[in-house]
Length: 210
View (cartoon, rainbow, N blue to C red):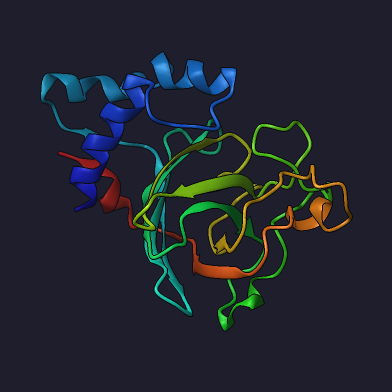
């Protein structure tokens, strides 16, 4: 399953289309900074040196999904986030990495946004933000989301490692710290936690592309 996913994913990365939250640095990375992707175009198997992590989202209602994090050249370079979520109300929903991977009280025990530098909340392309600030995802008329995000602050190893932490989908739109009140600078006024999952590193075999 994940081998097929990576073949499609690598094609997606090199096409430079579809992903959002892409900074100028990410655009360069997506285009040509990963030469080990090249053999895919010639039908040759490769073994990616990257890391993959997976979170299975569950909530108290009908919201569920799978979020996949892939970092081609850890600990440097961006993390690509893909996946699918269903059962959401139509519209924008805050989407964040939270500090704790604790499910003892459901999503409420995952703590605040992952914020090791103790900064104020912001948007995903803001220079000053929580490391876990991934902005908003958009649910369509059917309540479905197809994730295509690139982020350059989170990592799957090293000091900003998000493995073992939580990822949360919120009830409301994240105002990206621009709401003009104290809560905006903490949570973006994104409201209740609809679904969440623990980010777990995948087996190295799952990153093999054949």
